[in-house]
Length: 236
Image (cartoon, rainbow, N blue to C red; front, side):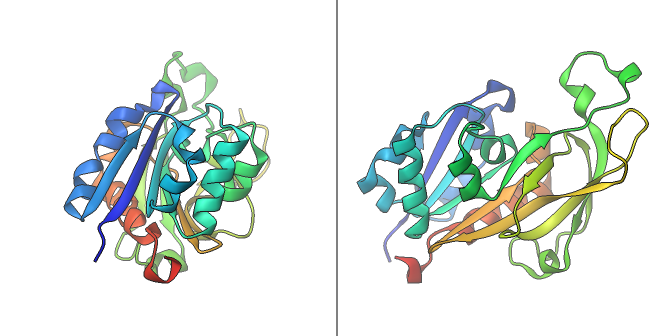
């Protein structure tokens, strides 16, 4: 059996610690038989031969920009069966100027509501709120999240704009607060999968900081997502 090949692409905004965050998952990939290649930019996406030989892309690139040929290469690889996954802003707040990237992933970060204004001190903790990630009925049965219970976090709670072509494994609800302009609670997908051509996409929105990624539940979901997204024999 040929060794599976994983491509880790990282960069963008340093606030999400793309190097340290991706380093957390390299031992898992290697233990599970992946040959891992690491790239510090999205230029590799334009290399058609390399992408065709890649079974899984793990992306951690917040914001930043992507060229049309790079995005076309990534999209073509996914359609042909390459898996695509990531967490938090590294996948769902990437390449804000690209509507085609949004179309590929199926959801995009809009905001993370913050604490009451009088409690804010100007640091990242201003946007840390206690919230619950709740498994859906599908999530309780899906191999990525089966056996995971609803869990509580105190970190950024992503509000995501999305389409209906995603299969939602977990959600989180933003409540109404006197200092916010919305008038009823809003529920956003927190973990989802997406089938795109022969490829599989997995998005996990928790993961702002290393302590969140190191939680057993979040880490298990991300690692299972990597395996699930990997090119299947029928896609090769």
